Length: 166
Image (cartoon, rainbow, N blue to C red; front, side, top):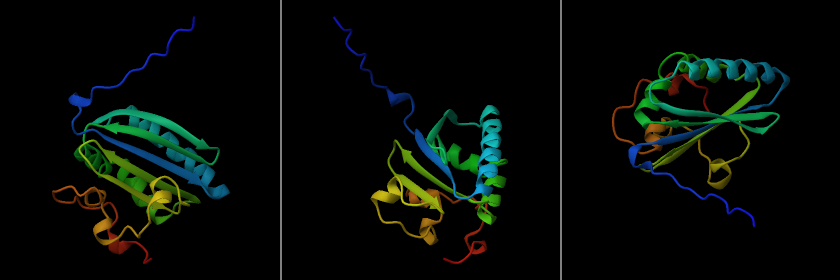
């Protein structure tokens, strides 16, 4: 007789402010292959350093040209604070200046409520294929505001005014 599958669930009571973020990078040109490889190595080093609040980091492969990761963070504040430090701050600034033939996206899901996403030079996928997409400007510029979180918005890595007009 076959052994029945082990069916389990999780108790998230110890993680009331858990935030899960999916991120991806897609190669759009030959130039993007090197950018993707460099970024992957930089991310590996940053994760190995143990950013405060990062509970788990997992790699994902969507296709040969499209890779990603899933990260579990203690709360949104620690995730947001990490994005304003090195090396992330440099990655984001440099990417927004020149994506080197790649596209990028992330989708954030918060246990306390709220979902937000941003897509840069990406075809419709994920939430961007389910709901209408809008320019990430004004009240939609910051992940904090897209999640409808209270509090001051930290200084952006790149100011909205410094980005090209859409």
